[in-house]
Each structure stands twice: as structure tokens, then as C-alpha cells.
Length: 127
Image (cartoon, rainbow, N blue to C red; front, side, top):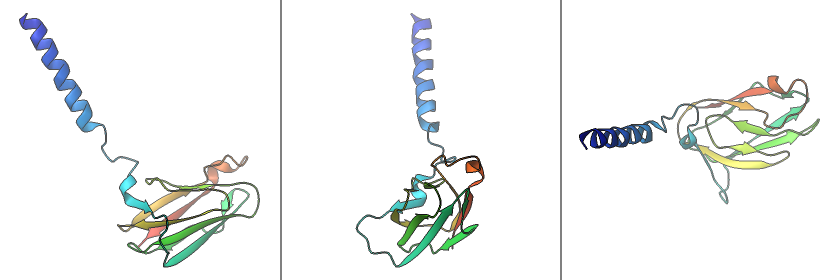
């Protein structure tokens, strides 16, 4: 009986530790940016996507300002994902976002677009 109670206690402790450590904030900081539907943006940036590159290596926005980020595909079909957030922008779409904290975020093409797809990257700098 004592062995069963010790085993059950160990299992409960293991589950509690696993639940507490499940969201360590590692690579998916979904609180970094908020998508703001129905909010008038104060600024706008347009990312132009061609074959295997964005038109700029870096885009800058200000923290705390609602910003429209538009993706315009000039060549091929592309999408954009801002890593460490839940922000994705579809082909020829615009999304209004607001970042609460300054930081640097990687942007990748999230639509397989050919041989140079893996090199299609840029940075979003939030000041």
C-alpha cells in the first residue's frame, strides 16, 4: 500500500512540474504583438516580396503605435510570418498590429515559393 501511495504521489508531482514548465516563453512570445482588428493604424509599412527576397532587409516601427503591415507580392505567391509572435500576413493582405515592447523580430516567408525560399528573410525592428 505504501509503495502505491509513493508511486501515485510521484506521478502527481511529475504532472505538476510538467504543467508548470510547459510554457517557458522560449520561441513563441505571443504576447509581443497584438493584432488589432477594426483599429485605425497611425503608420503603415509595405513589404514587397519578389522571388526569394523582401524589398528591404529591415523594417522599423514604433512600440505602442498601431501599425498596418502590408505584404505586396510582386513576383510569385508569398506570405509573411513574424517569428516569436502570432502575426502572419497573407499574399497581398494587410494586418494592423501593435507591439508593446521594443525588440527585433525575424520575418520569414511562410509560403513555399521555390528554391530560394529558405533565404527569404528580413527583420522587424520595434523602437
